[in-house]
Image (cartoon, rainbow, N blue to C red; front, side):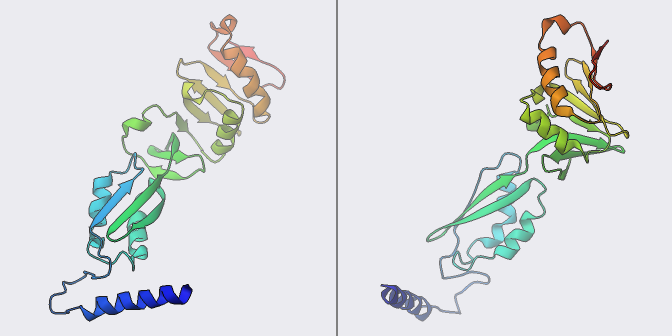
Length: 222
């Protein structure tokens, strides 16, 4: 069966190259599965039409001998793209599946602004409506991924958070969208997060604006 497939493949290439006429062949075009259509899928932030224009050089080149390095070089210029998957749909269509970075916050540090992913990657900031509600980070973000993971792990409603403030002592203040402030201790975040989630949803504590957990085993309300 393998020999049979190889035989037909050789016949195919023989027919292709036997009919090849270099006098009518245009520059950068291919007679072997030339790309006629480029389809880009799964984009939320990246403008697919703009990306398609950047990849226009692929049109009429061979789908069989794809220029992956050149594609990768263009993809690397887009901060929001984490990876792509190339799918060939013979005879002449290239499908590009895009995986985008997902910001979890905006970082403001020394008057510069970035998007920050869960993995701690910084992305150059630009106004995007889809990320308008993200919380802001003020100060050093190095320990933020750990804090964010603990909030998620304990099912804290992150959509209620307006901002995170980091202090050089190694602790965080969490400011909610209703302007209530949670002062976290330097360590043992998990225990505090579980407790504060139930307290914040308790109407008996609705009059308080500051929940101070900085002293071990104590909660100071203001």
